[in-house]
Amino acid sequence: MAEATIRLCKHVVANHFGSTVEAVSTALVKLGRLPLPMIVKSTGLSPKRVREALVVLILHGLVTHANATEANGRIITHYSARQREILRRTRIGLYMKLAKDNLDECVRAALGFDIVKTTLLSGALTAKQLRQKMGITGRQKQRSEKFQRALMELVRERYLTALTPKDTITEVDKILREEIEAKKSEKFPLSDKQMQEIRRSITARRYEEYNNNVIVGMKRKVVSESKSEHDLMMGFDDGPSKVHIGGDSQDEVEEDVYFRVNFDRLDVLLRNQQIAAYIKTKINTGASLVMGHILKLTEAKTKSCLEHTSSPITANQIVHSIPKDLPLSETMVLDADGPAGRESRLVEYAHAYIELIHSDNSGILVKRDERGSGEYVVDFEHAFQTLRDKQVDMFVQEKLGSVCARIMRVLRKMGKLDENQIAQLSMISVGMCRSCLHEMFGLGLIDLHEVPRSADKAPKRVIYLWHVDYNKQLQAMLNLAYT
Image 1: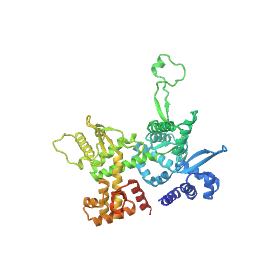
Image 2: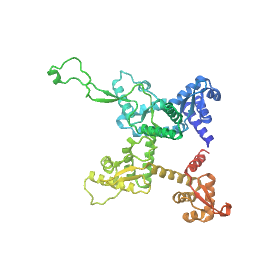
Image 3: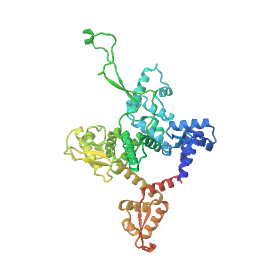
Image 4: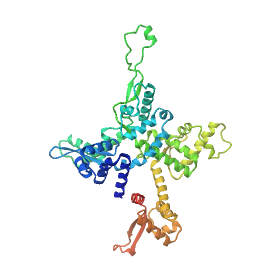
């Protein structure tokens, strides 16, 4: 699979940036962490062209760098490719559509989508560079105000994120640097227990940084207030007006901070779209609309797809914020004796759909508290498992047929089983079951666990239990997809 991954990364970078940048990135993907002289030697390019290619890759977040000090005191910069970010660029078409569909109409009208598109093409830009790229001058006051308003909203909604020096360093190097700084403050060599305590504090600090809600790249501006008519009448005219301590404050985007498109935010939108589509397939369109609305309410506090659950939200918050134009009554029939009035019926339909989604066996919407109408969270871990199982079933069905897909579902639900138990639960003959199991095992989709019944481990006295190893299954599916 490594060769297939390298080839895919090569094609992606060549398609997006050209042959020169592709040669540098392929060398880093293939050979790993390299200094500049080794990259020049492996690519055959001049040092100037290699540096230019590295700048492009770093701006787009595809390469990280770190400094290392040799024994003679010389500092060498090592570069390493980020395979995940390279492969992520295959979703750029989806990201563009998501940004266009999910941006607020006011932001979209105020050059919001153009800002996202320009930033995506250039990798990382400051507000000044964005204005130059988009041809916005100081004379175009109305367009400049629209640009400033749209940029501020994009940063606030985390479609754009500030690029900091830490973002261009690998995670391992960040941790090593923090460990070295912690060691310098100690006079004596540290014990294993002290090192574990330092690593725990580093992990806790990184967790706090992740949960920090401060938006980098925005600052508070205090607005000066002009003198009131009352002050002028009372004779408090002591020169030009000054900034009041209690005056109004506004957010503004810092001009010299580099911003890039936040792929984590767009991945959250893409994941939420898939969850809503699953609910539509499993239940109906009305349930999908309600689920999409719930996910939209929790998007603001969901920073990435790494979070296991969403922020809690009450049923009343869901119901009273549902748009009135949602066609919930078209896909559900309720008792005619319910409350009269369009709004009351909409509330009743919304509550019914919430209970319907909550009672689904996928466990995506979980009731956390019984107070009032209930407090709910979206369980992203269960949602991931549900979507993964659905994708695996579709893959096995397409490649091997319905019988193998049925066996896969039995193994996933029941765990480790021998072939006789699998045949009985799948309602097929033992011979057919054995051939299907061997076929899936040959492709790496299922695994085998041996349990010896005696010390000599003779094959006749060994129980063979079949089960699903999700990590191996993922690698096997990637191998089959690449070939």
